[in-house]
Image 1 (cartoon, one colour):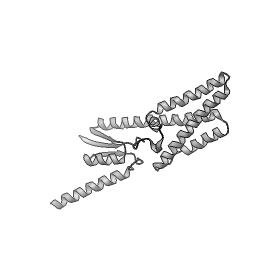
Image 2 (cartoon, one colour):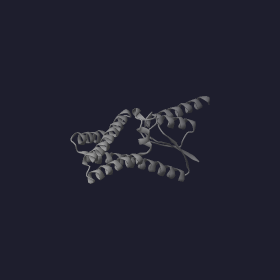
Image 3 (spheres, one colour):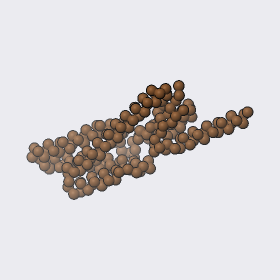
Image 4 (cartoon, rainbow, N blue to C red):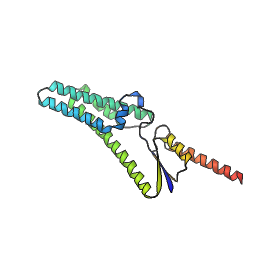
Length: 196
């Protein structure tokens, strides 16, 4: 049976990025995050409809502040991983909405932001599942790694016939493990050739 190594960037290899206590919860449960933000959005609307506009605005501001904090966290985390994203645009939109008193707009932008994260998480999980099913269905034994360093260790332990890797992984990017693994294989071939 052939072996395929699949390197996966799960986004959380060194514990919660940049020290946020809620980071692990956000990474593991994006649907929970979405549910909370939508619930606060709906709560703000219900408070407005029941004649408590100040309380409704406060709820929407809370959703906006949460979205701004989340956007700042994802922006800094992306920069820490040498990735450029659109998190700055979301952060500016949220800060602008909060600063100008556009309470509902802040809550809506926060909802859009966490909806995107939930969809990304679902799509990444689905893609891993489908790739695994495709490879296993074609006779490959699949070995997953959370980041480049783990992929390199696994590839050295049991040489795969195929490697599928995210090129922008934390710890080591997708290129580095492949280069190091190839260099190790070339050195092993040279040692074997010298023995003859």
